[in-house]
Length: 176
Image 1 (cartoon, one colour):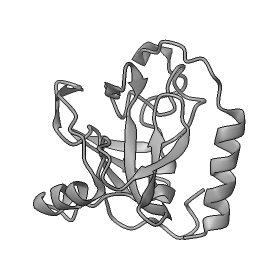
Image 2: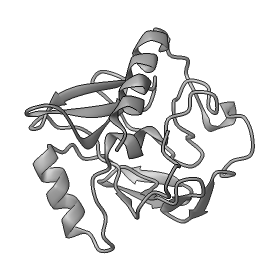
Image 3: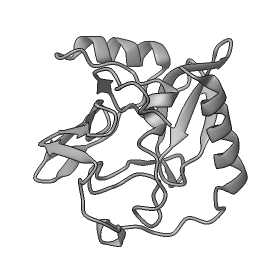
């Protein structure tokens, strides 16, 4: 993992992220849905990186084109256990992997394509969901990404955050 690129991204997001979020709906997205992702029910294969993502947060189920249920919250330890308990080699993403889903240009008011990853859960008094990564920042502290405004931050490994699982290995040279 090239940490210099990751830290450059973190600094850029913190410096330029807008302070006001605009309410977004799937209709406020630009471009053709899924041009970067091959969508198959509850899975989205990133055609650029080769990674396979769950379309819904863990705890939710993809049904009738949307995510149903309630997103769970996971510490790093419980997230790893949840991933291990699922069939198909699912795992907690690294910060470098999860940041590949961020793109503020596609859907107004979100930093992720909500047509591919619908119903980003709202937590913490209306803020967009904060998604856990396995990438350490300091001892006992790990990065997370917020999918409404698109920023990265860190929290303790025991703090409960939303989880989106990934599987596969990224193609060389495809990470930001």
